[in-house]
Length: 128
Image 1 (cartoon, rainbow, N blue to C red):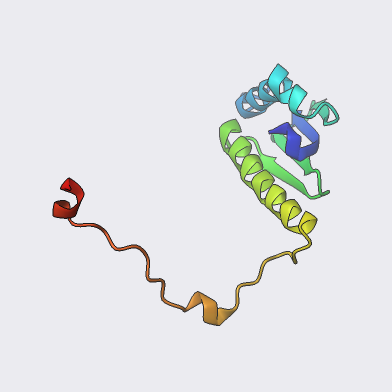
Image 2 (tube, helix red, strand yellow):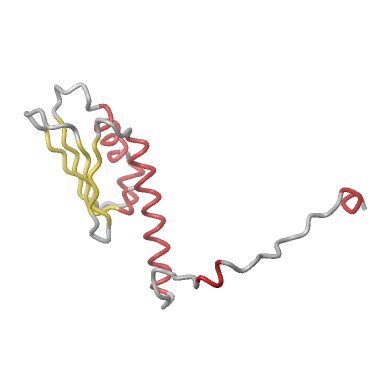
């Protein structure tokens, strides 16, 4: 998960009962496997003393920053979103390295073409 990120900032008040998502996400970030996937990723923990709701802010390697409300978003959901966006970034990088334009634009007429697909074999043909 961390391989797609350059920075993670976790903010919470330790006395706030809504910090479960922050604590779980922090544990995932501190896992050995996560740290090894991107040792350069900065992990910041800000312990607050006010009533500000817990939040997690991540900065992707392309500079895009995204903030999650940790009171209503489970850590696993945040992790899944990061992985999905990371796969998108990997795909974009592959296209750019291959000299292709990004984003890939499929002409409207190609989207409307019929696709012949494959013809399923009948049960009798499979027996032979």
